[in-house]
Image (cartoon, rainbow, N blue to C red; front, side, top):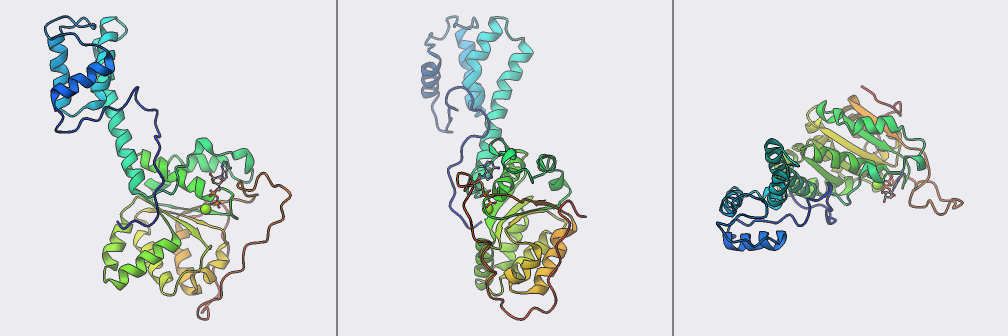
Length: 331
Ligand code: ADP
Ligand code: MG
């Protein structure tokens, strides 16, 4: 997929395993690995002796050889600790095996998640842990927590977050994306402006079908910032094609600083905007945020202008734009 936005460095989501993950490249020699493990554990006993774990050292070395052959750096990292706990009676043999494999599973999950989040081109890593609900009392916390259970993804429903600038729309939308990625779902982030640009470019190159197919694939697509920039001519139609392709097949999350009645102006075409909203709102959860900008929380008395007026319409609207829908779940 063509890069659409710069990617912020991805930080770890789950607590890291103790010490470094101990990357094992396919070509790594056993000697180098043994040395690395020895350096990490401080154990340098020669083969044939009884190691600090009580198991014959040759057997421990063979066990580590197997972990290297099977490319299990997560298990390799904890094997000495697990053996020590096993010998000390702190772990049963079954629990020791479980601990050894769990370390590998955790590392693999962590790597997959990092890769997925990187591929999704998230502009920042936001989660619910850092969201201050007390600052934004208009938000129905229960609704947001419920959305994080991802039922809407399973049911292929949409989520639209509405509200003025700085109230946390993108934060919450990104948090949903991260949660979906943590659950192994494919996710992708884009702004509406970048998305339309990429669709227009794909059409110009005769690759619209491929581009639409790619954008149809993620289980959750976040289209951020609807309303900040007017959609370029032809863009509304292309965006509609994407929304139509994803309709009842995959979830789309959208954020907008404009109410639905302004979408005709944003898309430069009231008919297309109505058709868009018809698809988007059929199975949709609306999170309507009314409050102050978190960015400007240290300037409570600051008088800000209202939202900028919508940009001049392109073409005469052929019918009145869609009306506002109820704030909560529709359909
Ligand atoms: P919007 O998309 O509504 O314009 P953002 O989600 O981008 O706003 O929020 C602006 C900044 O403020 C981001 O850094 C976001 O993490 C932070 N932020 C917004 N609301 C909250 C909140 N209630 N608690 C913690 N951080 C918040
Ligand atoms: Mg935003």
